[in-house]
Each structure stands twice: as structure tokens, then as C-alpha cells.
Length: 398
Image (cartoon, rainbow, N blue to C red; front, side, top):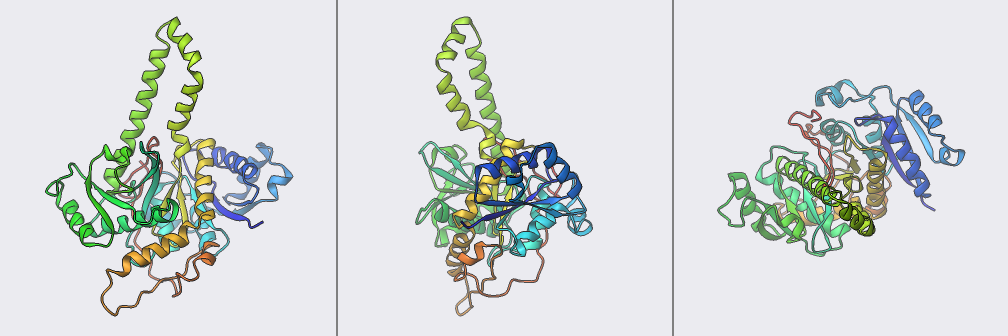
């Protein structure tokens, strides 16, 4: 049985080891074909494993990878990238780069995680900036890929076009949609609506080979109007935080109504199975974890304030990304979608993928990786319609 290897930044997030270690042990029990690489301060990790009662069977599939530094939630991108070169974050990303892990996960400082991942793994050819993407459920019974969810606050029209390519590639790879429809999030469906960047992006999308539906509004996100919705990270982050607030508001309203009287309490007991299913569907913890698309490796961002149950869902997200071949399929799709934009006679060059996913993508990546380090982009944490995201214009954690 082939083992899927996931590197975990155990020190990251609002809570660090008290969340990441229990989640790792629970996930280890759930998935017998996974091996976890725990990056961080060895003594502290070992102590937490002992405190959690890690069994011999679990320890056989756990490897502690030492790191001497920790990126805090308040660290600037420059500090995380240039001064803390042996941080648990950087060591986790390096495991993927060196082929020792198939994916890496962190709940730490979003801006730092984006910048480090981008610096260590580099971006795919034709992609300037990675974007945080998540497939979220809609009323049509399908899923809608939404990006960017906060990685890039300031974007150009060209960046939005690249996000659309990444989102389409993800939906094709994971959703098995041959030609995903793409919508540009705007304040109205009319072509004249929106700021100049959005208008320019709309023109680029119409001229591309993508299946561009046109402008969509906020209510189209959950209606399932299109398969992919594109926006800049500022807008995407606001949308998801508003969605989280609405989910909690509805939950609060239900609780108030069912506790208003004795008769209401009686009805609540009768409706409990339905309420439990509803609560499960809107529980933000189940949607924790989002992919940083556009990198040469599988990178997952967990919400910084995630608890153990929530962080385990981020690990599941990493596992699913590897098991479905997301990286190889996305890379191939990006190459196909960007090829039409290349100048005549310009060769299509792709750098090799990192991690075990590279094996499945041998035919899609052949040239050496670029040695140029990309400048870090500020990013927020990835979550779902009901989960919060951290955002920052300078890589700080909000």
C-alpha cells in the first residue's frame, strides 16, 4: 500500500501543538495509508505526543523533523522569510520540495505561509501569483470553486485571468467538469459595472479560451450559477467572513426559536435529527483547509484559530489533493489553458513538480525549475463559506 506523506507545521496557528498533535493522531487513526512528518521543536513535540498518549502503532507512522524556529502569528513576511530560515513552516515546505512529503499543511501566519511556500516551491509557468481556492457547496447540489480567498489583496486584470485559469484547472481535475464555466464576481451582471481592473479582466476573460459566463453577483456564489468564481483576495475574504457571520446568525435564530417556550423545546427534541444534520452541513470546521493553487507542490492553509477537529479536516484536504492527483492534473490543465496565450513559436516550458505527485505528472513537467525566487504575497487563511479567513496587506495575520 502506497503511503501518502504529509508534512505538518506543528508550531503554527493560534494554538500550535495542543491542536496540531491531537489532530495528527486522530487523522493517523482514520487513514491507515498516511505517514505524517511533524516539523517543529522536537522536545515540545515529543512531550505533547506523550501527553496525548500516542501509541506505538501511531508513532510508527510519525516522524519528527526538527526545526529550531517558530513563525509567530504577528511576524512580518520579511522576518519569516529572511530571518527565520529554520522555522517549522519553512522546514515543512522544504519536505515537499525535496520529495520527502507529498503535501504540507500549516495553520500559521497566512502571509508568511504564502511567501515561504512561494519562495521554496516556486510558481507554475504562466502563473505570477498563487491563489487560495476552495470548492464550496451550492444550492444546485454541486460545488463552486471560489478564488482568491485572500492571498492577494491587490490584483491586476492579468492576475484575475490567471486565477480563472487556476480555478478552471482545479474544477476540471477535481470536479471532473470538462469545460467549467467561469464567472467574474462584480456588483452587477452588466459589462459596464465594476472598477477598471474588473472591466479589464472581463475583456481578457472574454478573449481567452475559457468558458467565460460573464459577471456574477454575490448571490450567485451559493446558487451554483457557474463552476468557478474569480475575485481578488480582498473581496473574496470579505465574502467568506460575511458568509460565516450569516451562518452563525441563522444558527442563533434557530436556537432562539426552539428555546422560546416549553412547546418549542418539545418540537426541538422531535426535530433533533434534522437539526443535527443541518448543523453538520454548516459547521465551518468541516470546511477548513484550502489549496494554494499555482505552486509546484501541494500546499494547504488551515484557519489559524482551528481546533483539533477543524485542523484534521485540513489534513483530509491535503490527503484528498494528493490521492486525486490534483497537482499533476492542475499543472497539465494550466499548461493547456496558457498555451493559447503564448507568442507564436515560443516553446512551452514547464518545471518539474515536487513531491510524489511529480511521478504522475512526468509527462507534463520536464524542464528545470526556475531559480528565481518570487516576491512574497500577503495572504489570508483558507476556509469555507462558513469559516473565517485571516487577511493582511503586509503578510501580518489579522
